[in-house]
Amino acid sequence: NRVGAVAFVADNKVYLGLGYETIKINGQNVNLYKKDWISYTPGYAYAAVKANFPGPDRINGYGYVLNGQIYVGLGQNYSTQVRYKDLWKFSPATNTWKQEKDWPGVYNDDDGWYGGTDNNVSLFTDGVAGYAVKGACNQLWRYSNSSLIIQ
Image (tube, rainbow, N blue to C red):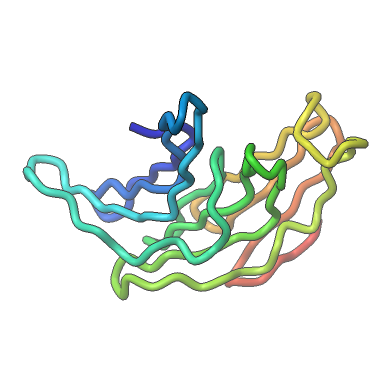
């Protein structure tokens, strides 16, 4: 059980991780953030544990799959109220992570925390490149060949 995990399908396998689970300690709820990365092949009884996500632990990350590579980033940590701008690429073939260029956008709020529609960010792909788009601010970024091209 976890909240705010991410999941993607690449090469007919499901990859999932991150998020948190809540446990009670001395009557207090404590969020245990996760950095694990798991692959599951539908029809098989077991999942495979992969290399842990190397960035900071988080929930509500964003990402996409492009050319069999999984890109994961952004998101936040509710406990510390930190929002992330980093982006990481996972290679299923080599079970390795590589940091890509950070998202250069701004969140446009006063307290540094998510709030309001102008802070919505989404990542997606068209099959050729990856994109980051920010709602209500007319901002679009294109990731291509491991580089960030601002448009």
